[in-house]
Image 1 (cartoon, rainbow, N blue to C red):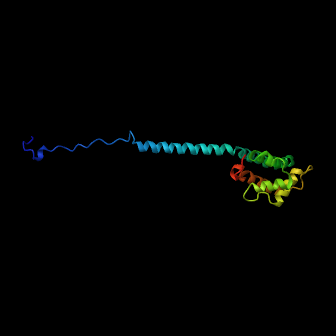
Image 2 (tube, rainbow, N blue to C red):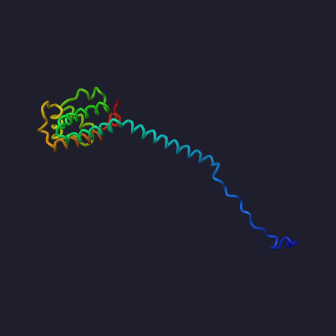
Image 3 (cartoon, rainbow, N blue to C red):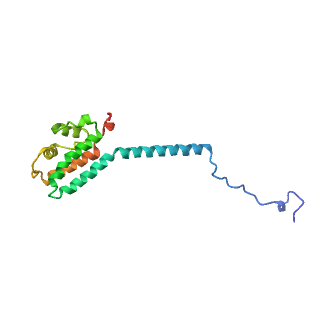
Length: 173
């Protein structure tokens, strides 16, 4: 029974809480922040795709070098596979640098060019002489021992992975 006295405690009702505030629709600032994050994500994805496509020739050259390394283990294919290493390096250089700069290089100039395109020298004198011997000899490559061929493969892999392109050096392609 309700009392007629307005100050009576019997006239009190339960407190009714308002409904929770929903997340949607968002405030304008949140839409701006989401749009900015979407732009940053799209730009980053574009740059990663661009870098991946730009370095496709490296991946293909490294794959070819791996195939050559596997075939060097076979004694019947050893000489032919060793002779393909300088060809692979030249093709890769032609993919990364202007033809006028690379195509005519031979001998010591070619080795100097290869070493100038990388921070640490990839082809020190013993490996450079092995590369020249493999590139320019017409007979059997019996003088190229296993350690020399391994060093040549390692130096070639190092150059293929780490050479700087003309864009990285600051030139035009």
